[in-house]
Length: 497
Image (cartoon, rainbow, N blue to C red):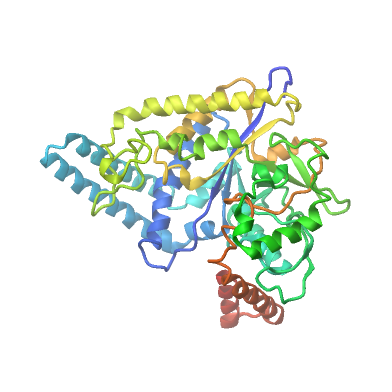
């Protein structure tokens, strides 16, 4: 890297996850949920990645695939059932096209024919790839186009799990499942909900009558299993200032916050160093404990430009509306139209207006990215970076045009002098003498702490979860080597937890 003409490094971090839906029926929260994500997000993104890599474009996308999702996409049940779903969608679009044409609704008929072509192409690609989506992602990683990172085994919310054994099991199985599907060890992990907890003397807010104990910080287990980095939200790096009014809403949450703050306030002081999301920090450099664990921090500027429901790109009135669907096939024929428009006010989707909007939106993003890098010129170019994390399913499922936007952005970033695409692992490799920081407890959820997962409506679940953790730990210790039916039952218990 030549410091004279370099602005810094950049990566998209895409977090891919769906709950386990196999054998849970079809609709609305069964197999069709997985089918939709595969058809609308995973295959379109694979196309984009394969196309750009074939053109020599450096992608350097950091792609998280959770163990739960990897197991489902690799499962024979999904592989055998998915083609029938694609066929149903194609045939429904064919009927829509005939009906719209007969009614003289030519624009809607054109959109229906677009859906016919879309699902026919999906059928073709899925078969050409031998129905192996995980294998396709693995090939891209082996080719150096992307870096795949792991996640907790069942996407458990780690800070509120009641035992260190449960936290360790989530991370250990996450690493083992990654190794099974991708043939190597992961360098990075997406902590579920970007939720982190440091080590301190912990008393469960769900079971305050139980004796507290000294907890290990989550980074301890990451380091133990060779994880080099994870991603946090901006406010967590800055010292946990996004807590807002949520503590006042629930006494148990206030108790947990007070407990954590008492233990960590001396380690998390804003006056220690001026922290910025535009460089790597180490969270643990204890000698003799292996490689340190690095933190990559979400950039609020580029992230909100995509996420925001008010002024983010997906809210452009020309883009496909997510909510309004045509019965019975479920295809979408209407556009966003304008903010806050109800379903009856949605106007017809016009295919010819999309390319121009994607060009303008992708140009805006790349210029915004370059501006963020330029503004942070107090950081040496070799260590300067921007990390933009998103849920993968935003691209294609929620925002239909998202993969097309991503393709344009990746190509333009590659062509922009001074911006170096780099995966999360590559950013860690170039971190140099990064500062060591202590993080407070929190997440990227609303309010910045645990309110979304621990509140008056969910409080009742946590004593049950904690009891199940303790029972699972006991069974694993007593029968961990069991085979046959007993072993199968133990594995199912672990999956359910």
